[in-house]
Amino acid sequence: MLIDTHVHSHFSADSGESMENIAEAAIRAGIGVLCFTDHIDYDFPLEGIYFDFNVDEYLAEIAGIRERYGGQVRILAGVELGMQPHLPKRYKALLDRYPLDYAIGSLHLVGEYDPYYPEAFAGRDAADVYRQYFEETLENVRVFEDFDSLGHLDYVTRYGESEKPFPSYQRFGDIIDEILRILIARGKALEINTAGYRKALRQPNPEPAILRRYRELGGELVTIGADAHTAKDLGTNCRRAMELLRELGFTAVTYYERHQPVMVGLD
Ligand SMILES: [Zn+2]
Ligand SMILES: [Zn+2]
Image 1: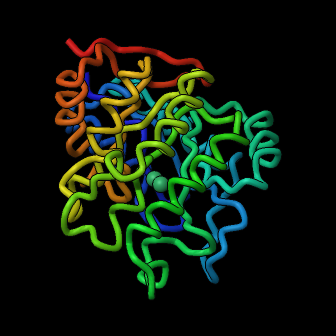
Image 2: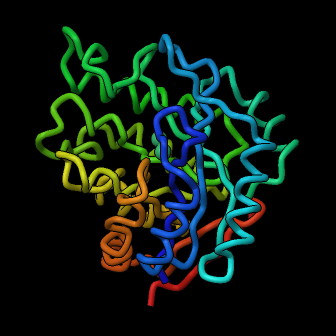
Image 3: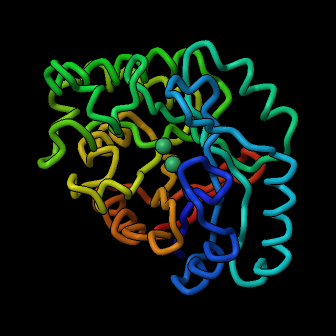
């Protein structure tokens, strides 16, 4: 069964896609489980971008979509939370208040910069920026308890020198091991985000070496998402990600309902 648990609709500041189009694309692609995960990134330091939305309206719209398409695809309500070390309490209040199925914890910043923009790399070695991103991910994972899966762990390597895959684990394995150990000890999942396949990177985030290491350290919970911001990208390369997981020795893919893991066998 195909599963895509990372997708953005018009509730995200960087997507204009309707939930109808997404649900219909999911049915066409043969996706069995779809989880909306629109962006909430409190205190995002970029001028003019506001990653937040009315969660009541969001849940109401998802309920309508579920009513209409729920017989053909399982539709879940999640959120992608942008981590910063001062935010855990505010996100906990949000998750306590609303009956969401799933929360991805993601880091979209390096210091005050979004690495999507070239300024994040101005005058610096890309590898230094990458190291800072992993260090800040570790800092966030240490203080955040309330998320289900860590989103696109080596996201930063999509940018900077991203024409060729960057060997994140080889270079920063010490920091990455600490992140993975915390996830495993707390029963958190690791996401395999297939958007990297669509970009210059030509590999998922995180890179296979990091997924292999998560497994070696005892990690079993892996979520899959294409991180689509348009209906046409929905589910892209999710099958390929499942094949990669099988090669790496994983036996199941995980999705979440009311923050409880549901494991689906890979066979
Ligand atoms: Zn993200
Ligand atoms: Zn996303």
